[in-house]
Amino acid sequence: MASYSNSSYTNDFFNLSGIYFNSSTGITTGLAPIESNSSLYLLKSGGTISSNLLINGSLDVKSTFTLETIGNVATKINEKQDLINDGDLTISKILNLTTILAGKQDVTTNNTSSSDGPTLEPSSTTFNEIISSSIINNNKNIEDRDHFLYTNTGLVYNRGSGQALVWGTAIRGSSIFEGTSFKPKYTGLYTISISVFCGNTALGDESLRLGLQVNYSNYNLNNATAYIVSCDAILNKDVNILHGTMVVNAVENQHIRVVVRSGNCRYVGSLSYFHGYYIGSS
Image (tube, rainbow, N blue to C red; front, side, top):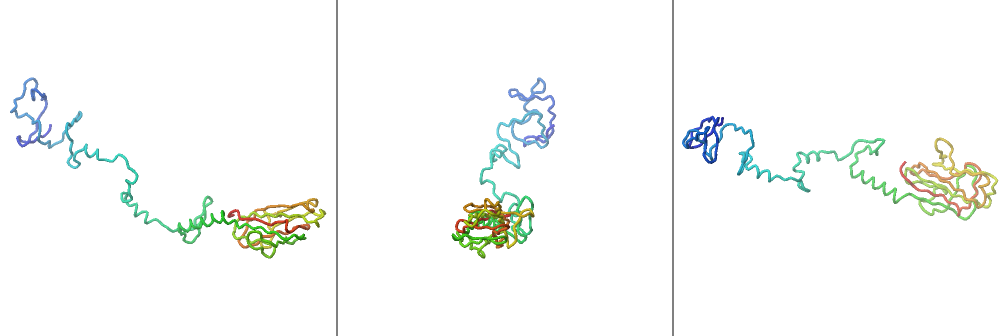
């Protein structure tokens, strides 16, 4: 039952059992119509329902459907935006995001390293400093390879076991250290090459082995003796060119030179070359 009130009627409860509604005859109970002044007559408009209204079927609203705290329901639904376009969502509309971002750490204070990533300096390093360092290293790798190319005069030089090959002209790169050596600018991997043009005093009567020294110490690989050039007596002869290349794990300012490990190296200075360049960090 529903409680119905209107200014023309006293609020009361109506038992609607057995009551039928017909647009032409009004309200009927069974087959007999109810008079218009009947106490069971319901107004077609106006009034309020003060209790719960249970509708088992559908509700067909011919005009507008209004809720007290929302207003016209259809209007409110149509006003809703169906897509979020570019620029619609601003930081101010995201709860506490500005505060959270402002509280993030902008300086790296820990030494962070892993097998899959780079190692940061233990001192405080800002993001801009990291990027700047990366740019410097990248420029170093691409633009400045610390390339060197040394040669000598047209004389024939004879260097015996334990002696370093000598150079007199720096075609490219830093100046020659002590007349024999190259000083790397960076710590990292360098490719080092030697080309020896055998002079007319090289008679092909002895084998020859050349090696590298770093800071006066023999440079070996895998804890074993390593040579940059090794040939038998037949090759160590006038007009032959002996060539070799090694990758060296160099250290900044620790000089590198070529030395005779065994035999004698008789070479034409102007036709022989000592050269190399930086290829990357070790």
